[in-house]
Length: 116
Image 1 (cartoon, one colour):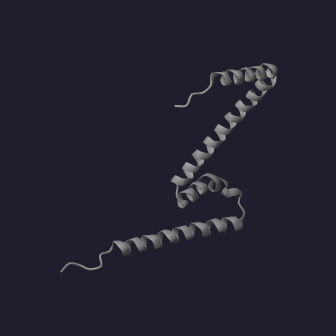
Image 2 (cartoon, rainbow, N blue to C red; image 1 turned 135 degrees about the horizontal axis):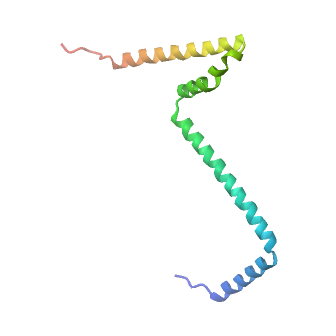
Image 3 (cartoon, rainbow, N blue to C red; image 1 turned 180 degrees about the vertical axis):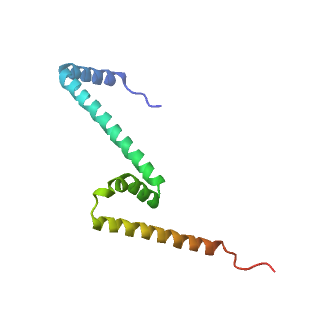
């Protein structure tokens, strides 16, 4: 292991101590700002991570279902006719996709040859 000279550490410590003593008010103010900044940063990154985890867990259909359930259905009475038709089309397309996927899955699960 390399040996560190103690004299250089002591001299550096004295310089840092003097700097802190001379600029105590500015350092304390900076520490307060840094503390609140770090706190806000942690809160924001925590929320982003939670949202990303939720989005990753939910498939596209589940996200759309949640969107319709929470945002669109409660406001249907205030929607205009064009928006209502768009919602109907979206739902019909989703149902059609589900039917097509079921048919594909059934074809794949069906055995190619029957035992004789």
